Image (cartoon, rainbow, N blue to C red):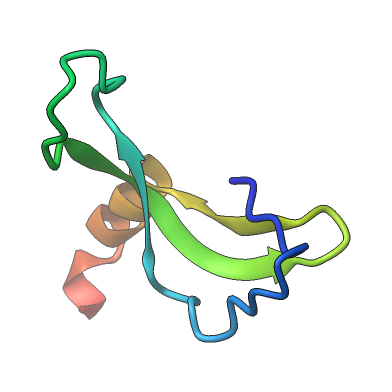
Length: 70
């Protein structure tokens, strides 16, 4: 997920936070909170100005495979 740092933004502390994506394009004119959880953030790649993480499908797969340990 692109996360430009040209504005001197420091994403430190975002590890483990959700990566959210809109489910609508806003063409209806009125904003509403239609988002979906796309993944979990694990890192920030400064060189490519991107947040790095796991797709939510992979997270769910991992949790299901390890539910006896949770």
